[in-house]
Length: 180
Image (cartoon, rainbow, N blue to C red; front, side):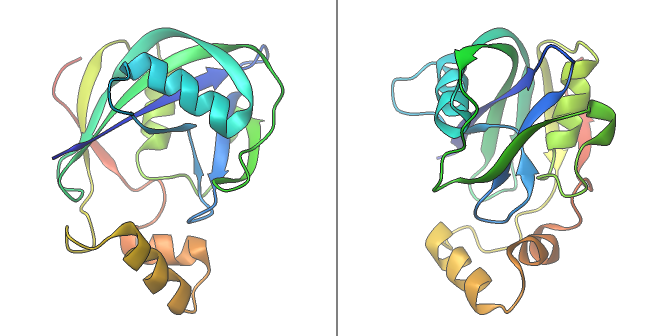
């Protein structure tokens, strides 16, 4: 069964974009994660932002649905735009190494596959797009996350270098729109 995730592009009053540095691969990404059973997509995005960053947010609109049909059994991400309404910036220790707001013209060099494209869409005012992120899953679909992490830890590579070796250079994902 395909995986459903939700993420959010959150901007501060200066227009900077909130990103978190993932613990598992030490690359930067939008705050987000898996949608829980019985949970609405926008609610999942709000919850994930709160859990990972400490900020309460209000979702303002759907940017789009971004699909990776060739990743494992398929991953479909609902990506929203929103704004902070409260809380205090504080990373979730087991998932987030660092977090901060970035000037959208100066995002970090090492961004999770496809997230730069999502940020660009959100900043351009895109609403309700559907798109396929053209990147291939580098492992067999039955390989568990734990097994991949064991390979990462035994590889002798940094977490980021392991990511780049298997998923390609950050920012290298191409996008194929299915609607505008």
